[in-house]
Amino acid sequence: MMMWWWILIPIVLVLVLFLYNGKNRQYTVKKENPMDVLNNRFAKGEITKEEYIERKKTINPTNTNNRKPKDNNKLGM
Image (cartoon, rainbow, N blue to C red; front, side, top):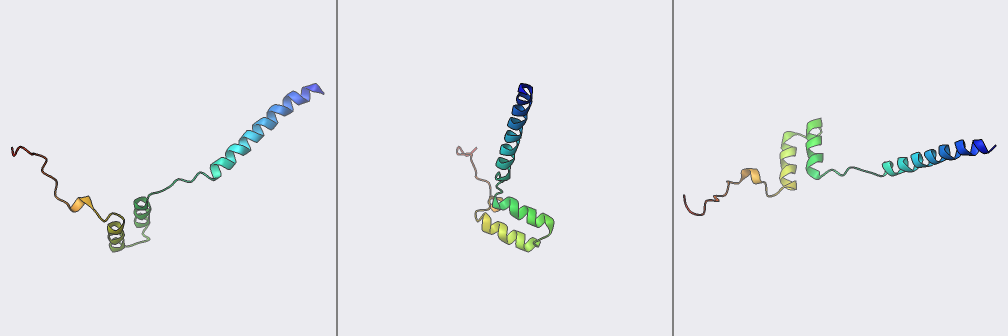
């Protein structure tokens, strides 16, 4: 009779740990930034190129791609 307890207790502990970890994983959600969502929608074909460009400008109003690079040479060389 005592031998069954030594087998049953580890099995119950493993099951409890397995169920506890499974519940924690359900609530773990990867957070995507808005640009990732927009890129995925464009890649899937859900939005057109024009919509993509317009929404990209809305997300990033200070788009650095259109700016000229700064002249960091302060000595004038």
